[in-house]
Structure formats: C-alpha cells, structure tokens
Image (cartoon, rainbow, N blue to C red; front, side, top):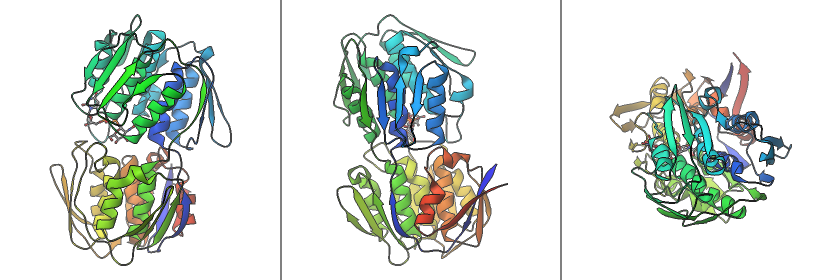
Length: 418
Ligand code: UD1
C-alpha cells in the first residue's frame, strides 16, 4: 500500500485548477439510471469513488464510456441487473444513491446496506422511510435492502434530519413518480442543487432545490442529455487552508466562491487576505494564522467536510480554538493523529479545543477517513521533518491528483510504496 511522504516547512505559492465536485458527480451518475437516452456528464473528477460508481453501473449491465478528458457517457438501455452488491457498497457508502433511481424507474432494487463507518453511525432510515411513504414495499434481509413497487406515488415528506444523500435519493425517486412530491427539511447543499439542475436538463420538473422545500412534479420519462458538474467546494477549501497554514499564497481557478461563504469568512477571521472574483479565489496569509471557533452544521453553515482541515490550521495558529462538530458523532480521529505530531488539542464530547503551538513535528500517521487524511497532509506541510501518511487510499477517494496539485504550489510531497 502506498504512503505519502511530506517534507514540511515550505511556504506554498502558486495557482491550481479546482476539479469537478465528487459529491455532485456521485448522485448525478446514479441519476443517469433514470434516463432513457444516452447521457454525457462532463467535468468529472478522476477519483476512486467515481471509479467505484462506474463499476457499480457496469455490473448492472449499463454501458459506461469514460473518455480521457473525463467526461463519462452512460447508456442505460442495456441494464439487466437492478442490484448493488456489498463488495462495492462497503467501499463507498454513497452507492445507496442508486436505490431511489432504480426504484423510481424500474420498480425494483436490491441494494446492500452500507454498514458501519469510521465517522459515525450514518444510518439510511430516512431514505428507506421516505421511499416507503411513496408506496415502496421494502424489507431488509441478510444485509440487503429489497425494494419493490408499482409506480411510486408523490407524497409530502418531512425529513426528521437534514440529510444530503437522503434528500438526493428521494428527489431522484420522485422524478418519475405519479403526482407531486414535497420534500420538507431538505438539504440545501450546492450538490443537491446541481443534481436538481441535471434532472431538469433531462426533462424532470424539480423546483426549490437549495431551499428547505423541494417540490417535484412527476413526469413520465427522462431523456438523455449533457451536463457539466459544478466545482468541488471542499477541494477548494482544502487548498485555501494549505495556503493559510503555510503562510503562503494560493490562487484557485474554476471555483464557485458563492458556495464557500462560511469557509471564506473563517479564513478571513484567521487573518487571510482574499481576492474573490467570479470564478477565482486568491488567498494570501502574511504571518501566523489566528485560531478560529467553528461549529459545523448543514449548508449554508460551516461544512463538516472542512472541519478536519481547520483543526490542522488551529493546531499551529495563535491562541485557542474550539471546533464543535454537530453533524457526525465521531469525526475527530484526525485529532488523535495530530496529537502525535505535537498538537495541543483536547477532546470533550463533540468539541475539539486547541491551544496553537508554534510548530508541529513530523511523525508516522494514519489516514482514517477522507477529510481526516487531507488534514494530516496539511499538518505535514508545516511539520518539522518528514511526515509519513499511511492508508492514503482514503485520500484518493476524494482528491484528484493531490501530489501534482501540491507540487504545483511548491510543496515537497511524494507517493511511495510501503
Ligand atoms: C453527505 C456527503 C458527506 C458529508 C455529509 C454531511 C455525499 C456523497 N457525502 O453524506 O461528504 O460529510 O453529507 O454534509 O454527498 N442521518 C440519519 N438518517 C439517515 C440519513 C442521515 O440519521 O437516513 C444522519 C447521519 O447519521 C448524520 C446526518 O444525518 O448524522 C447527516 O448525514 P447525511 O447528510 O445523510 O450525510 P451523507 O449524505 O451520508
């Protein structure tokens, strides 16, 4: 298994392009199952989670063509298996996103339960209950969700918790349902909006995405089409923190700053200067960052997927910072690894309280989940000595060409076999 080796201490300075958003591409690829004609999805990032989704569609008999510029063409006319096996779902929880589209279009689906997850319980009860309310007959047996229905029936859903993939799954199921579906307490994340736009491009009637009430009027069928995925706001935020933590300068191209408001506010509070244009953000950090307090919550509040990166920033910032995690109950594994690099962080329930230190020291550390691994890379960029990060398959799930992009900014990072 490969490791990442990072030689800390370089000030980053440079420009990079931000890739298409992983968390928008995954539901969009799942939603291609709803389309009767061929669909082309462009600006797809080159990531392991995308490969897993392509495999998932492929083993259903769907024909998927990936071209070298990373557009993906999907043709569902050859589908012959309405099934998502455990082997794929266990490597990527978001595989559950095929449940809604399969049921909505074909009236049948067998999807493995995702199982445990390093960052908390992450159940799928809201997905299942919502589909049942739309008329699906669902049983759970031997670790699999078995779902069947005649045509789904539009209904009024009031989600008990804000869930991103839950909202997306139910929205996709409702697109071909009979009548109107209202989803209240819907997730407002930009990726939910991107999925709605994609569905509407194919002929769906989805209104209100980006607000807590989404209204879907069922249509008889979706056609093919072509769509460009939005930029990845979490990748963008991660590289901005890389600039801030190394007291450097980083300019991002092909980014949508309007999706990053909460993150940009915190970077300014930490002392960064930001030049924000329509599709670029340039960050300059002169001097040591100041620690910030953060509370994660659903969009538009501060994203849980940026929490670990700010924990790294706070670890070397001036003063005390309190991070409160309200979305997932066990998302501080990175803190334990950072402590091994000399970070002064204490955990108290869902809070991580840091007293910033002047410098971290390199240590062998282990990536435990996707965003935790990004935070360890950030910590490695400012640690004295050579940090060695193992289990980096987590990072390849969500960061396209991370070594190349960090090289471009002047970091000393390389991938090496164990
Ligand atoms: C998505 C993102 C992930 C991000 C998360 C929160 C994708 C592919 N992944 O994950 O990167 O960290 O949103 O922004 O888009 N919950 C329930 N019952 C359910 C569903 C969720 O109780 O049926 C709870 C979860 O345990 C969690 C909270 O709701 O505490 C939010 O989770 P959710 O928004 O569903 O996360 P994901 O959609 O899995």
